[in-house]
Image (cartoon, rainbow, N blue to C red; front, side):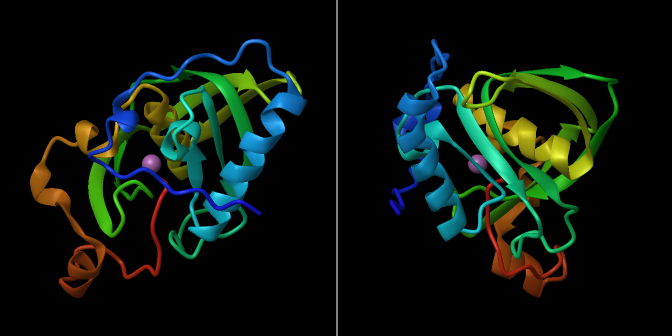
Length: 183
Ligand code: NI
């Protein structure tokens, strides 16, 4: 088990554009995926992107049965997604509170597309294609943003809805949740 250090906002590595994985070789990817899974589990993340542990490759993982950080979130299938591409199913959006393991203790209200299709590959090179809505779609958009060097505050339009989770909770602005990232 290798729990890697998650880079925090302010680290220039989080602002880089990651490179496509080519070719997709399960044996080569195995150590990275093990580290991503171990790190995400240790931090109770809903997802994690390779650049967050300093690897500038277009690899994200996400998914959970239930997540103490997001107690109201529906289950999201555990997924390895390589070289992801997101397309919109429609233009509708919704606002939701997001956290990120790279911004520990903070939450921000972010507008995301509600209904998306995402495509990519798993670590064996098999095509992954799904439609997703709501929190699932939010997690995918959040994680894929990391591959382009985008952190969720860059998606925010009203910085008044940005703060510390414990303080937001104390003030009744967000439901108390004993958790953090990713998404
Ligand atoms: Ni994140």
